[in-house]
Length: 333
Image 1 (cartoon, one colour):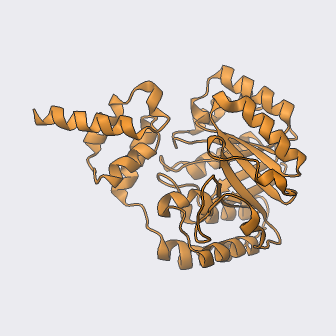
Image 2: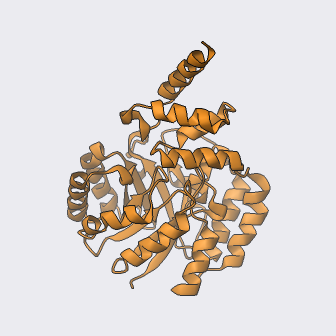
Image 3: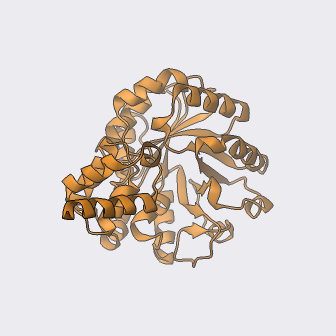
């Protein structure tokens, strides 16, 4: 078994719960506590082409976050490939930073070109293809070959829809095992089917000859039904692999900040996110229903079944809104 590390994405994925408005003091406290807990990577938020205040974990540069010192952790940012002009960050020395580039498979070549520039600036680069569970064998083969040529720091298996199972991981194992062993493997799960911890344990067993990085968030806070809980995976790793992580420090943040200030997902909302995963739909379709106070599971089933195949895994608000209005009109007849 090679090294297993933890990447906490509370400040980035958790932002889907609070519009990334954690508050400046909370941002500092969360980063410092995760660092004390010896978390390996702390994802500080998104890099985007927007202007926000220091209360938000949305950044257009790394200048502000440079001021927050970490002893153990590498500060990390997520970039959606189509939402950021990279020219700003490449003016900096990026030696002590990591960047995760999220993209659709059709943009693979341009992402690899930019990833090389980041690498040359000293950054650790993660390649994060969206909707990996929907990829064909041909797409995975092309992807792995490109990544082997690039040789980034890490490649991420991202369960965007929260629909992966143990069987899905095993099915893709042979193709993923063609990845060069000097590239770390990262796993980012969503807990829509309540399978995050089970799938993560399976992932660790399947890829024991790679350096592994596990995504998680404090209390599982995140988009849809949330993520793997940082406290759970750290306890599992402490017990079974390396007694490294300070669980008490993580739980302190969970109780004093995450649970105290940020909303928990209701059981009814959990059912909707579970349904999107079962029907291979993007979790934002459940979010649309929740925001519009639509709680009927039967209506949600009808609505998701009407989604065109090419719109299921990529959220389109115009499409879901139009389908919902048509459904209401038909029911009123």
